[in-house]
Image (cartoon, rainbow, N blue to C red; front, side, top):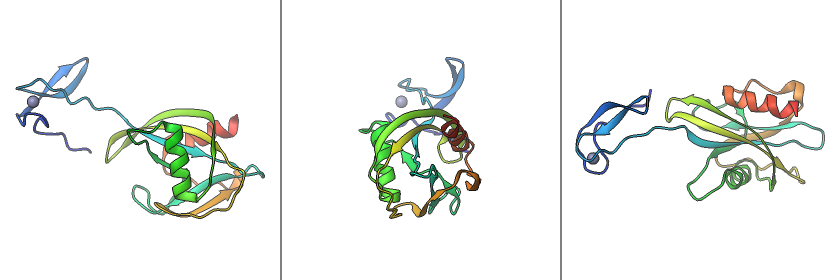
Length: 165
Ligand SMILES: [Zn+2]
């Protein structure tokens, strides 16, 4: 569970829990700053090859280190989710891509961030030479009936949505 903040990041006064817009929120007793907490945006990349196989990466980092999951990662402040997806895909698999369809968006609890909001985007690639890197140990296209269990429920929903399109 994410630790609540104790002090205001602006004026360093003590925070107290107050009911604001229907939620208990840490609120500054001096300047009134409210610690709104929202899911952190993440992009998940859905990529198929010519055989209709799905691209997954083996995670090199926690959470779920060593598990197969969708390529992707956090959306930086200056990026759109589409730009973030293209960048992460390149970093993790070496593939150049064009964004395709928006597949879906789901929230999921996260130990580190409280919750993440994963936006699933299809990416179209025309060359399939995989060069795993960054926080991916391996990258591989899986036939649909051999897709391993992905440890994140929101990603599993996105894969289902994508395969049902
Ligand atoms: Zn304050």
